[in-house]
Every structure is written in structure tokens, then in C-alpha cells.
Length: 140
Length: 123
Length: 211
Image (cartoon, rainbow over all chains, first blue to last red; front, side):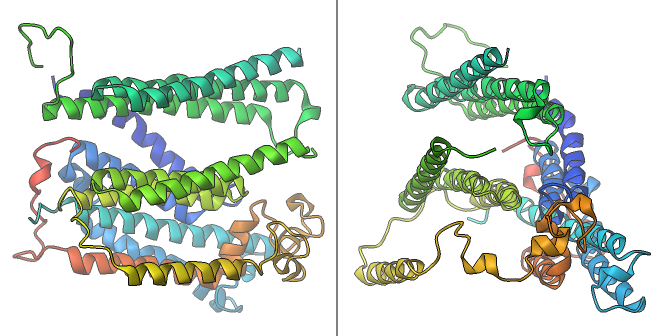
């Protein structure tokens, strides 16, 4: 019997809920405590838990390093892209009011998209830092 | 009716607090690592569980008497969230205690037994 | 629901207890020689800080502090400790000059806080500016998001300020996080012999379990 059977089973039970909770915190940032930063950290914690229990190799297959590193930039591009789209539609940089038919709906849409960009960047950075630290051997 | 729920929830909260304190004392005063883990386990399960049970009773009371709370809180949603917290606590805390004991056993730490058995099979 | 004097006293007692625990934990961390225990105590410090921020009615900050400080930060320090030594080197001797500098700076800071308004003072500067307040600008005159009076109408005013009124600052913060990630990649990435090959699984992949 594998030594770590209990931990593996419990982790397999919990990781979907952790990722789901991260998505919940991300998209309910408008209505309760939450937002992009917290959601990114929680999402990365789920991937880190998987890497701790099942090994770095399995975690790298789930979140390959090239994909995660490109996601760091994609998140910030989403944020800046929202600002540019606002400029293309006639407003100032990062003016959300012109994004939709109504100023209020535009604000809601803009806040949702920029928080998504922040969440993606934070999650990708945390996963990258985890891979950078965890994959090394002892130096002394 | 409300007084009964209040008394029950007060009893649950106090019991949870007492169990947490007992677990903390055990965490410090027990002689052996594995015995100290028992103290940690009591804090996680009985302490947190009874406190959440007391809070569930308060949410239940707010659910049956809407004048007592703010209009913006839905007590049944609060009760559902508390149940989910209880579910996660009851899964993660014992498994983290198990992980600690497992790591100590793998490392070779043996418990202090008064009468060590003659033959012991390692699993 | 009006807060009675007993509730306020209880809240103040809890805050004083939490701050005392924070101070005691900080002193213990500074004096602790075993580094594993010191890292665990920093996790405890972050949790206590998160509880304190929750009592100060700041759930967003408490959330972030608990997730980042007690979760990711503790884990990263433990991962670093796995690569270096387990015990701090002994102090080389008593140095009076840093102690004097720290005491003087601390006294100057405490003297500076004597001028600040009391916590929650309605005449404080923080409540007078900006005018109208962000709550009114976001949610209308009564601060109710269901009125559709304000500009944004979100229940969470913190997110509205963070993402819309001060969206440029959040843009800069995200760029800082990206820079930190790029710095980690530049400094800590091991050299690969040929491009396009994935890095070989390292030593701890064989154990297949938690350290």
C-alpha cells in the first residue's frame, strides 16, 4: 500500500473545490470580498498542492512552464487591452463607460475584465515562482 | 424557543472554546510528539466543530426570526456556508495531522511507550 | 443594531489581545534560532494579522493577507529552507549602534502617530476628502447599490475603487507582479543544454510525496 494514499485521496477530493473557490472569489469580487489578487493566489495554491502531493513532474504536465510564462503576460495584456479598447471607442485610456451601451454596464464589464487579467497574472506568477523554487536541489 | 436556541448555541460555543484551550494545553504539555499531535487533533475537530455548530444554531435562530438580523444577510446562505466550512475542516485537519504523523514515522521517530512490544512490523 | 458598551469593550479587549500576540510572535521570531520554527511562526504571524484586519472591518485585506502571507509566503520560505541550513548562525556579538538607531527611529514614529486622528473619528481628514465620498460616487446618495443612482452601483466599494476609480494604480501593481515573475525567471531558471527540451525532473520528483 502506498505510504501517501490518504494524502493523495484527500488531495484529489479537494483540488476541484479549491479551483472552484478561486473562480468564485474571482467573479464575485463585485459583491463580496474578493477580486483578482486573492483569486489568483487561491488558484495557484490549488496547483501548488497538486505539485506537492503528486510530484513536480505531474504538476509540470498540468501547467507546462511555457504556457504559464506566457499567461503572465496575457493577463497584463488583457488589462491594457481593455484600456486600449476604451480609447478606440472614443473615451480615455481605461475609461470603462464607453465599453457597453450604458455607462453603468460598461463599468461593470470593464471591472470584470480587468480583474480577470489581474487574476491570471497573479496565478501564473505564483505558479512560476513555485516551479522555480521547488525544482532545485540542495546547494550546500 | 429563542432562549432555548440561545442557550444551546452558547453551550456549544463554550464547549468549543474549552476544547480548543485543552488542545492548546495538550500541544504544549504532552511529553511525546505523537501525544502532542492528539492535542492538535482535538483543537481541529472538536474545538472548531463545536464552534461552528454554535454558529449554525445562531444562523438557524436568525432564520426563524427575521427581525433580529440585517435585511441584507440571508441566514440560510450563512448556514450553508458554515456547513461547507465544517466539511472542509473535517477533511483537511485530520489529514494534515496524519501527514505530520506519517512524516515523523517515515523519519524514524518512535513513540515513547511504557512497555515496548517485542516484535514490531514496519508497514 | 446598536452596539452596546459591553460589545465595544469586548471588541477592544480582543483587539488588544491580538496585538499583544502579534508583538509576542514577532519577538519570538527575532530570537528563534531554529529556522523551521521561525518560518512556522511567520505563518502564525500572518494569520494573527489577518484576524486583526478582519476585526478592523477590512475583509478584502484580511483575505489577501491570509492567502499570501500564511499560504504562499510560508510555503516559499519552507521551500527555500529545504535548500539551505536548518539553524541560524549564532550572533556575532552585541552591537549598540543599530540598537540605538532602531530605538530612535521607533520613538520618532510613535511621536508622529500622536498627531493622527483617533481611529474612526468622523471629523478625520480621511472622511472629509474626497467630496463627495467614494461611497456616494459609487452607489448614490444613500450608499445603496440597488438604487441605481451612482456611477457604478456595486456592493463592494473596495473593488469599485480598486478597478475603476484607481484603475491606473492597479495597472501599475499588476506590472510590478509581472516584473517580479520575470525577475524570478531570469535569476532562478537553470540553463538548458538545447532549446526546446523540457527540464529533467529533479531530485524530489522521485520521492513522489510531501517532504
